[in-house]
Length: 353
Image (tube, rainbow, N blue to C red; front, top):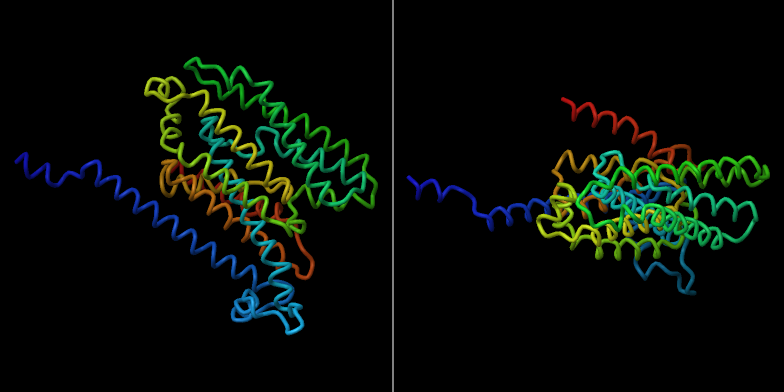
């Protein structure tokens, strides 16, 4: 009897193989969806292109004999591809940051902007817009503001982040970030009231998510790669951290360095996303929630899946923003909020049942 029962019980190695295959299947499915949305983003817009023309435009042979690219290649390579890649990178960064902050704060309502990163970026960017400086100075100002906000929260909550005592410090860190975000919000309101009328529309558009400036997505993509390399190897320890600081320390996890790593990676990911596309809401909140409800809370699977899912979400929202009232465009953040609110409410109702 014992032999028969033990032969049907999965071993630890078998369970690991099964979990690895399941995670790979989820990642592959999300990657396929991302490629489909990417192709749709390249083909659709104010000028619709057939898939064959899109593929031809991506080939090096799409340049004319004189060396200049034809119109289709110009649309695909110069306008749509960089914008789609910027949308993917920003969505992936926001979803990854959201998943990390939900682990760090052990709060399902945590999202990338809860620690005031977007508020600091927006304040500095709006000041640069009022001054009428070049776009690259606006981007640099946004990142500087995000970095100032990161340092501000890090300084105010240093005792909570650096404390090695086995207790839950997430509520104080969350309150520190919320108060900092409220302060930035007050400054943003003041700047909008002081802004000249000829700059106000552009400022509001940036605040609600704008991928028009995403012609150079490489910085956001590089930050995404670095963030994944920095945090994915720590995923097993994040699973332990979810049990609480005291339990994690009892199991041999160095809680303080891990907490700092999570905070810095999440904050820098959110800063890069805000710098590239302004403030895009609900992605960092809804995408990790959706994946967690569907596939579980194993961070080894969730973190890469969140990056892929967030990229798909923002690329899809940008596609809707470009085509809904073409040739005019809507802010990407408006689309993510319109879709994100009912989806999140549905998830809450489904979870209660």
